Image (cartoon, rainbow, N blue to C red; front, side, top):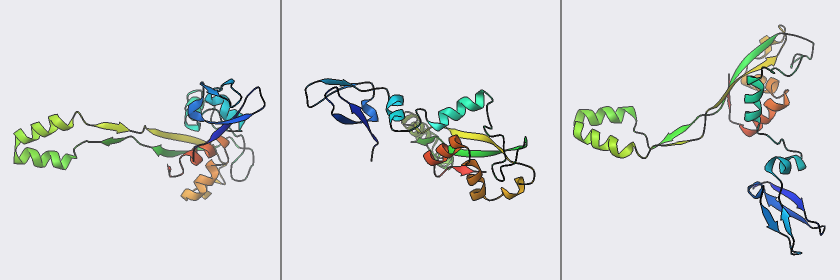
Length: 177
C-alpha cells in the first residue's frame, strides 16, 4: 500500500495525498485549491527521512564523513579502529539481451541468422534498476572485530548507524560481505 501524507486546507479539513501529488494542487471539498508541498516536506511531516538513504550515503562517502560513530558498534568503547563491509543492494538487470551461449550456437549454425537475430534484438535491450553498492565503514574495536564473521552479526553492527539501518530497511535482501 502506498504511503499517504496529510495536507491541511484553510477550512480545517485534512486531505490525504500520495507522494505522486507532491508539488501539485488538489481540490478540497470546500471548493478551495490546496497546494501540496514537495515530497521532502511531505515525508518530513510524518517523520520520514526526506532523502533516500542510498543518496544520503553517496553524499556522506564523497564528503568523507563516514563512519559517523566514534564508539565501537559492538561494545560501545571509544575506538579509532574501523572495518569496511561491502553491501550490494541492487544491480541493473538487462531484459532482451541474448546469452553468450546462444550467440555462439547461432554463429555455429548460421552466421546470417546470427546477424539477423542480433540486429533485431539489439534494439530491444532494456536496463532495469541501477547499481546500488557501497563499501561502508563501521567503527569496531580490535577486540570485537573477530565477532563480525556471520552475515547476521555484520547486519546487526551496520544497523547501529541510523543511515545504514534505513538502507537495509529499504533493501532487505541486500548482500552483505
